[in-house]
Length: 414
Picture 1 (cartoon, rainbow, N blue to C red):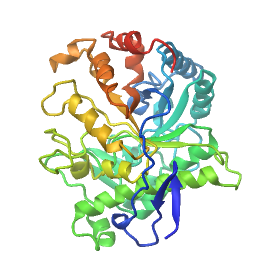
Picture 2 (picture 1 turned 60 degrees about the vertical axis):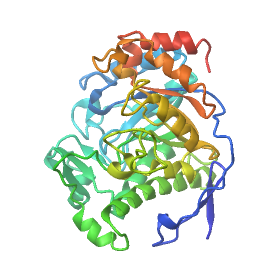
Picture 3 (picture 1 turned 90 degrees about the vertical axis):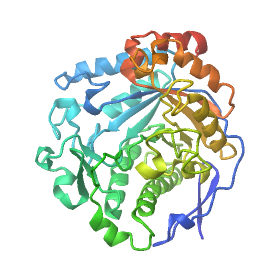
Picture 4 (picture 1 turned 30 degrees about the horizontal axis):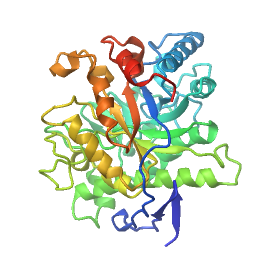
């Protein structure tokens, strides 16, 4: 079987019709310690969460806001921006695959008159910041009406690709043509711009809703016959998305065909919900009692992606305080440290800056909680840094938690 490499790992390439469940494992390279400290921040565009602050800003106003965010990151001695460029199957660059995102103008498909991703990459790099293009693979809309999508939206041209669920629209991960399309759409940005990374968040199959059925019956009947159950088939679909994306990024980096990405390193990472499985479900799992397990509920075998070496880095969203009974920060950081050990996959911890100052649990009242997280994580050499959600919380810092982190831990630039 022909083999490819990603970050120096041997990974089994899949032949047509073969199963990832029989793919070969990684050849461990040792370490797992990042070569430099990650000090990252997620800059979310979905729902105008972080940027732009509203949809009726002029291009100059949008650019001023983005520069201000980047200047704040530099002042806080951060070094990496995870910039959300495909929030709902639309684009923050002139994509030939998908329409312009509505967060820029208020109307999906309307040209904003400038190129936000190109501008963001240039401005980030001028300040010494890395910029990772953050994509959501399958989310189509935060509503359930296809008629509200842009007339040329792929979800309208291919209604058979779309599953309504919980008042939202999603692409069906069980269709091979969907998986190929979303990869093509995302990789277009990598070909066009010198981004430093490709980043997925925690949404693959949607989070479960009690009493609701994600209707992929037809896709399962067509493509799931060789699997013992639907859950295994769904996990394979997600595994294939991650594996194939890693393979295609690796090929682009080595290509001599003139793509702008040829010969440069584009790192690939995922920021999943932090609980792979509870130990009560699987003895390999964490000593947690989480109501959601990525393996079982989101059909995302995040542990496998690390152990197989399909990723360059992983950023579990460890969004609980130290001492939380159901999901303790002090349990999950060591669990992930053991998981990356010997794989060469870098581990960064996702931090819930947005929860500081929240009413519950009481630990979030203390602006020193996140600083204690960093102090605790330094016991584990596998932890190469932290990423904060989200940009407006870094800028606003309503509780003073970010200022405390900077004072206690970021005395110099990384």
